[in-house]
Length: 204
Image: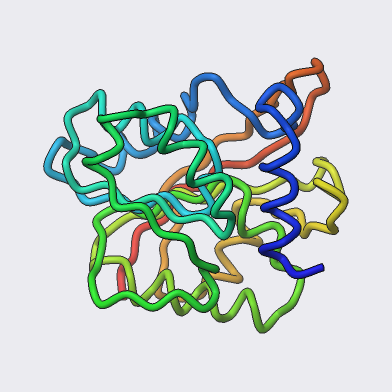
């Protein structure tokens, strides 16, 4: 099964209460974006957003330049239905971040739980290149992954766990670690999952 088929099946068959990663309120992500200088004039891309509420919060803050990317067309359609008319203000993108092509840059890149699925070094390298090419100089990236004591699998797939420091090593010298948060995510069925959220600045 292809990656796209896998995620289309997940989002097509399950309601949000069955998704371990669902958050009613993406508090940590928004805190770090605000620390990065998020304003209503910022341009933001949410990578692997699924049905995340990040886009809802950004719209509430008055942002007009929001892009939402996910591999799953089912996830994108679900998020668009939830937002209704508000979703017309959003640039919706169905694509694999490792092969996505864009000619523009963003002020803030947000990724909660995509990078840790990239177990292939070539996919990680392609992601880092895309991040570097898509982020403005001095722009910021908020990247959340399972922490070193987090799960080793998610949705039936292997993951790679990271500390803020090990993630910084993978991103390379173009990015500087600004700050981080460790966070215990509570799944809809009350299981704790250990995440790390890291804020990086593109300095080269």
